[in-house]
Each structure stands twice: as structure tokens, then as C-alpha cells.
Length: 59
Image 1 (tube, rainbow, N blue to C red):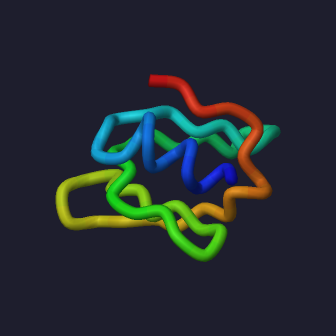
Image 2 (cartoon, one colour):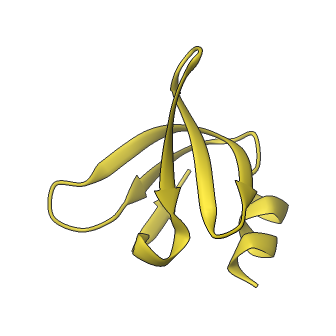
């Protein structure tokens, strides 16, 4: 359900994802599947974030 929401509203958009504490990530959501978001943080560099760890997503 959360994957569908992320794909519908945030795919290929630049977002800031907050996971608590100092864990904040900014980049473009390139893919969302199997409970994982793949975020392009710098051109050609990616990080993966577990959806269940996300507190907020801001555009």
C-alpha cells in the first residue's frame, strides 16, 4: 500500500526523506519495490531505504 502511494506521488521527484535522529536523505526517487526505495542522491550514486523506517517524505 505504501509502495503504491510513493510510486503515484513521488516517483522521479526530488524529495527529502527523514528516518529519525540524524538520518535524513535528499534525492530523486528512482524505484520503489519490495519494501525498498532507491534514491539517487547524486547523479549516478544511489542509496536504498527501507520503507518501514521512513517517518516523513517531503518534496
